Structure formats: structure tokens, C-alpha cells
Length: 234
Image 1 (tube, rainbow, N blue to C red):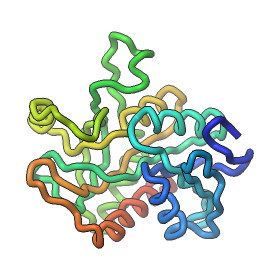
Image 2 (image 1 turned 180 degrees about the vertical axis):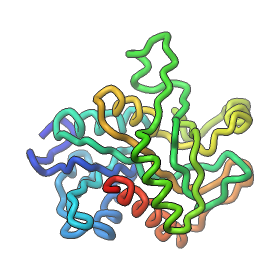
Image 3 (image 1 turned 45 degrees about the vertical axis):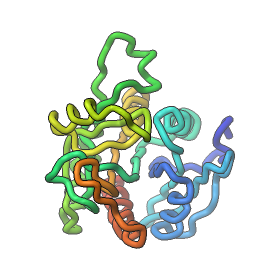
Image 4 (image 1 turned 90 degrees about the vertical axis):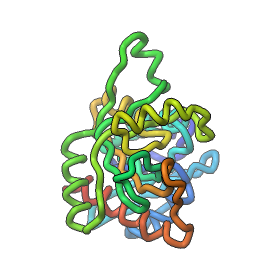
């Protein structure tokens, strides 16, 4: 066990799906995994391990924001041997071509800063997804008939953003959507030589003001979880 994860040796699978919300981790584990068991609840950050089509999978919350995700990603990789980490979460659309319920597969993740910034110092490192995971996720999404976009996203430091000028530049430069965790996940994965990907459901839109009704979220998020699982074991 670690400071933040109370799982025992062998409790964490090599493949880990990471939603921000620990209760979404619980829902996803109970919905998609066979015989899920609770392996962590330290600080209320729930983690479950079960199987999917005979493959062992852990679904573990990351919390909100890059500093929180960085803690869990580092410990999952360093102390529990995780080899594939896939963020599953919601995001805000930033292009008119991106619709509510669409799925974004993040090729790159731009940011103002990340917890890894102290390592890179003057270097503007470009964190990106693992190609094999990205390719498999797109194939899985297309097979399901889910409208999918592949490209850059923006990992923000704050939820209550007061930088309309920055958002305008993100949109101008083709950024598909905004969330708060993927850039650091990609940084940590690159540092440790493991695979990482972010598969995101567009739940609201910065340009149109649209938002996904709460009653429709479960089905849309379900598509995202299935795409992530398919990509992990393609």
C-alpha cells in the first residue's frame, strides 16, 4: 500500500481506467466488470478490480485536476506496476464541429502548466497519447457508430475559467475540447515508459452553451468506457 492507495500487492491490474469521479469508478466497475471488488477507499478515492472478457482491469478514481491525478498515476505505475492508464471522463467542446455526446480521443494535451513543469523548466514538452491505444480507440468507436474526433485537447488548471482570450486562441488553433487531467497523465506515462490515453465524452459546449441532460449521461459515458476497454485489449 502507498500513502494514498490502500490496495494490497496484486490488487491492482496492469490496465487501469481512471475517471475523475470515484463514484463514476464505482458505477463503471459494477456495470462493465465481472466480479468487481473494492481495492481502495483511502480518502474516499474508490478503486475496483475485476475482469472484462477475462482480462483483469482496475477502475480507479483520479480526483479533479492534474495535481490529484499525478499522485494516483505515479503511485499506480511506480508501486503497483500499472502499464496502461486510460482516462475516461467528460469534457467541454471547443469546436462547432464537435457535438454533445461525441467522443474525443486526445492525441495531444496542451496546458498552461502541469505538476511536471518543474522537471521540464524552460522546455515546452508536448505530451501525447500512446499510438497503439489511440488507433485502437478510434477503431472501437467507429465500430460502435459513435461520432469520434481525434486531435488536441486543452487540460486546464481551473474549472471556473476567466480567460476568454485564451479559450478563443484554443478554439482558433483547433483544440477540440477542454478538461483538467490528461496533460499530466501523458507526462507521467512518458516519464515511466507506460501507455496512456484519454477518451472523453463531450458533456457541454463552450461555444453553444449546450449541456448533456443528466438522464442521458449514463448511456453516453457507457460508450466511452466500452471504447476504453476495447482499446486496452485490442
